[in-house]
Image (cartoon, rainbow, N blue to C red; front, top):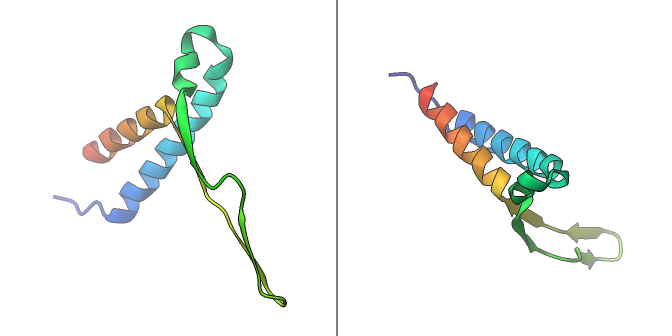
Length: 83
C-alpha cells in the first residue's frame, strides 16, 4: 500500500474548494445551475487593525462555503481515495 501523505490530501482539498467555488460563480448566471452558488459567508466583515505606532498589523478572514465547493471537496476526496 502506498503512503499517500497529508500534503497530497490537503492539496486536493484546497484545489476542490477553489475549483468548486470558481464553477459556482460561473454557474450563477445560468438559471438551472444557480443553486451551485448558494451558500453562506462567515468571518470578519471588516479587518481588525492593530496599530502599534511603528508597526500596523491587519487581520482579516472571510470564508464562503457554497454547494459547488462542497461538491468540489467530495470529488477531491474521491480522487484521493483512488490514487
